[in-house]
Image (cartoon, rainbow, N blue to C red; front, side, top):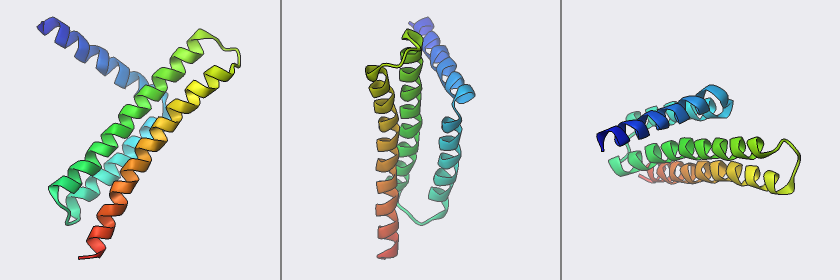
Amino acid sequence: ELIKVKNRAVWSWYGFYHVAKTEGSFWQWIIANIISGSLTFFIPISYTQQALILAGGILILAAECINTAIERVVDDISTKQRAAAKHAKDAGSAAVAITALATGVVWFIVIVDLLSR
């Protein structure tokens, strides 16, 4: 069982490394997360609010990894333009956008809460 756990960790690291190496947008989200996450330590918000913002940032990175996986599989199947391929890629991109929007909503509510104190 320990070998299986180790293998899963190694495979996950390879996936993370691949996305970080090949996707510029992944690095944009990492930089956004560094800025966003750092701010949560300097503004007077609750631990719950901080956790929601940090978790949202991590989920954006996860969505970007899933989007990259979809793109790789679609491109591996065929380079030919197909409506289904476009829809799959667009849906993956939408997942990233929706996750980012959710995190933005958390930030918005946190800021409104700060300003109403």
